[in-house]
Image 1 (cartoon, rainbow, N blue to C red):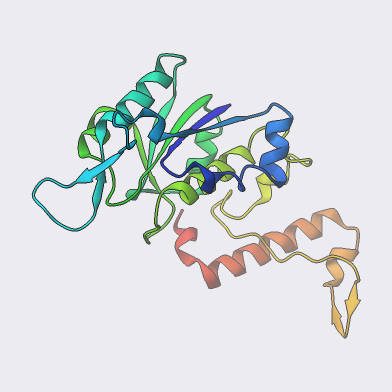
Image 2: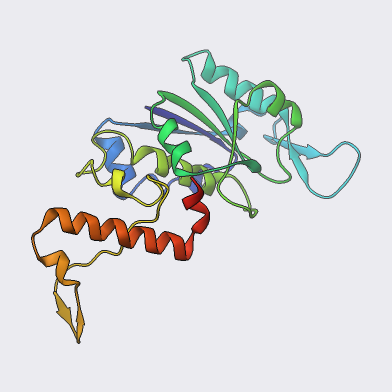
Length: 225
């Protein structure tokens, strides 16, 4: 898989892709993440990528021309499954969306900034709009990192135990059950006996029941699915 991220603040994306699972995935050749500085496609000496909004109002708007040049250059080199715009008014990211995107080959992610992008960008280039929640960030860079993480960890070979991702919260429309590790008892707090019984069938039954209980208590809306 290849993910191209277009941003006016490329340094914001250096750390998320330079550590842990995302770094290992790139080193193993399972994913290629390329960050593009939008200012490199500006047409003015000052590398301007934003301007005032027509009709007035507070805030600046990202201009269409630099974005056009960047996306067009990328699309001339390869075919992309989706051009994604990270925006608060996009479809809310969920596990099923991440699952589907992990099956794709090439993705472009455009990070919004300021008051957003010229609407003509959305009309001409964008095929999918994604939000990571009902709140506003300073820009789309952190959202792009979140979306990339959610996708990349699902790629075959990225996690040392590939079954781990299948038991994450939301994969089966439920929250994950409680988990425990050693020691079996700590300051009077004990691990449930069933988990040390060695009875695989009963352990799975216990986990399912606890997942249902936790979901019903904390996210009953998930059970509607």
